[in-house]
Length: 112
Length: 115
Image (tube, rainbow over all chains, first blue to last red; front, side, top):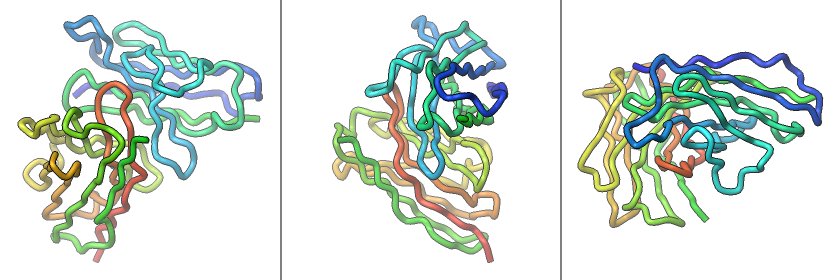
């Protein structure tokens, strides 16, 4: 199974600052079509997860351009610019390169 | 508007069965692979099973193979998860999800396995 390892944030992050969340996979997530099969989700307190980006860097419909995904085949970053109170929650990376699908353990973002 | 509405959760005794349903609307259900993902109380996300758009292929995590069955009825735009031989470690909120680009999640249904 592909193991997904997420980093920790130095919480709380002041409102208006930037935050970067890291995620590492134990195997390359680049498929033969050239796409990198990595999703980022945000789960706000009491809510279901919401997709932020897919194919490593493509923003999902309706997602603010303050969220940007980047990375290589095994190391990924989700950058949140000008953080706001509504960005608080737990962020998860997920690989959809192969089965079983696997998630990182989550990174909590708190806003000051 | 895309909607995924789960139902069928509740309290069940260990060893018993339960069937979850997910009613989909707002998109062409038969065009998408669908999945179930669960989240134990205060824990992270755990993929459970996926079914292809036409139901011809299914995939499961090892811990539920042979106990859970994912299925779909494209005519009814409904996804199912039949869960047999339930264990305490299956206690979780179960989310119905649309796979692929622009994945979407339902609000979840809580399954509690306890005597």
